[in-house]
Length: 207
Image (cartoon, rainbow, N blue to C red; front, side, top):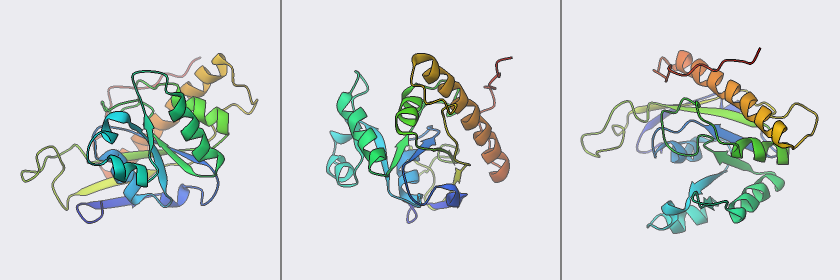
């Protein structure tokens, strides 16, 4: 990542140096995952769609310890693998929106909240900005080579309310709490970097 582009990494010191951590990133481009993996201060084990393992990068992804997940069904093996990463004190990477989109955290799946509640690991928001703003003429679909991409880490937080509950209601509450924090971090990252971020979505707090 550092050889092909010029990532500017901000706030990497916010990632706890030891213990289980979940990195939660926005996802607008296929480059976002590799950019986080290539610039993070600790090795990251991402939940990666099974289709990516079918191609030539499959052996590399496995060698790097990435976790294969089948998005078409409830993949128990992927859940077990992700929890194992956290139980061993590692860093789990996840895109809580589930797939590439607007990257505004408007629609979050409950997977992130589930892993956070089960492991009690802190969540660190990550905003990758600039991966889709411009396209390379030499490599269609990719940002211009040697172009700047910002990777901004936010303050770690706990997804739970401190009660230790793992009920459906607790999972829904944690998802809303996560959504607020990730959306706020995305807006802050845009201000810090001068990058344009999605603004159509604004989370309305209950009450």
